[in-house]
Length: 300
Image (cartoon, rainbow, N blue to C red; front, side, top):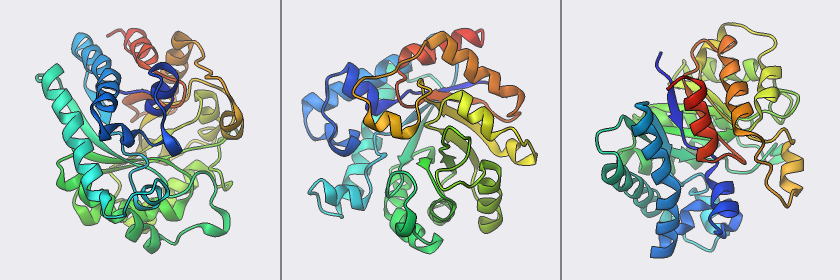
C-alpha cells in the first residue's frame, strides 16, 4: 500500500511558529478574518508543496478539531454555528488545495475532536449520547464534501462508538483515532486493541479504519506489544514529536519539537507491527519539517 503523508500538529504549529492565539486550542477561529485565514494558508501550503514534490498522496485535516457545540458555546458562539464553521473550513482547505496543488492526490479530511479532553471520568457519554453530540458536526462536514471524517485524540470507547455510528448515519467514511498514554493504554486504562475490538463489535465494523494520534512512537510501540489481528485495522499514525506525557505537555511552556529525522525513523519503524499502516503524519510539536523527514526516510 502506497505511503500517504498527513499534515502535522496544526495547533502547536500555529501557536509557536505562526504567533497565533488559539483560545481553547481552537484553530477554526482563524477563519473569522483575513489575517487568520492568511495564517492558516501559510500552514497548509508547505504540505501541499511537499506532497506535489514528493509525488505522494496527502491527507489534510480541516481546522475543526474544536468545532463542535460545547466548544463553540465555551467560546461564546451559538451552537448553530456548527454548520457554518465546519462548512467554511472545508471550503477554505479545498480552495487552498485547488490553488496550490490541483493535480495532486489530496484528501480533505473533516477533523472531529473529543467533547472533553482526556479521561472524562463521571462525565463520560454513552454511545447514543456521543452519536447525538457529534452528529451535527459530522453531518456538516459530510455535506460540505469531505473525502472522509477523522475523529482525532479520542480517549474512550463509548465516545468512539457514537462517532462511528454518526459517521455511518451521515454516509461518510469515518476513521477513528484513539490516543494513548505513555503506558500505551487509553487514558481510562483500556488496552488499545481492546478498544478497537469493542468499537468494531458495537458498530459491525462501520469504521473505515483506525488510527493512533497524540502519542510518541515509543508510547505507541507499548500499545502494540500484545499484537493481534486488530493491528490490521490501524491505517495510520499521527505522532507527537515529544516523549512527554499528556499531563507534562499540558503544563509545558515550551514546545518539544524533538529531532525530525529521528521522529521519522521511529514512525516508519512501526510498520513492522502495523501491516496496514500507510498514512503517516504528526501531532503535537510537529510541523512540515517532520513530515518532510518522513518522505525522505521513506525514499520519496
